[in-house]
Length: 256
Image (tube, rainbow, N blue to C red):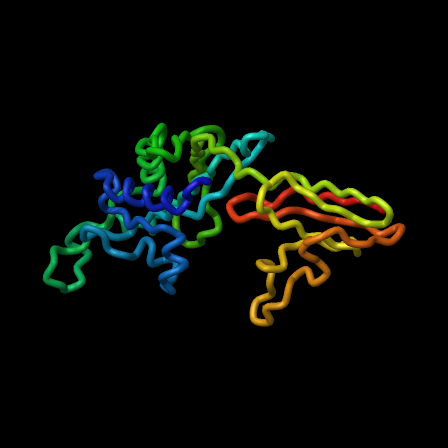
């Protein structure tokens, strides 16, 4: 499993530590959404190192998967960033900006959105985040971010190829056997719980799949298998197996 939270936090630390971006307010969208009700323009209006007018947003990542694999899906993490330039504010002379505080006079961040973007690419291309993956700038990686009006904004996309990780194993398939109208269910996964239905509905794990508040099973017609049971001609038997630590097994069905 890819630790996307760690990726975002590491990117924030890397970019905040870069001298080229010392006058740029850098924000993680994840933290911005969860912990702040500030308007979006606070990204470029927030003061950093006595500078304002520039901002950089680390957007929430996306996952791309373009092929199949029996050992786990080969994923690409698409990392997206938005560079901001608030009009001429980043280039305001020192003498023109002073909020009356005891600190040195405020100044503009001094960067066009396009310059922030170029620094971003230069810092992150071929960067390896230990234990997770390597970042690469490839293809059509940059375009205007037109969803932000009244400010010069550029969106940059960088792909990260994570280390290959094996998919969590599933419980073994459930075998359905009917003899003399008596159905027997078995699985090779030791200690797995088998659930089944006879009405075509999903054989859910009724100890886990519970509705919020009411605590009623999401799959009320699912039954935990404990012993062979009687079935009628034409009944559709569906079953799967569950065990903590494993993915749910394949959903199998048998028309009696």
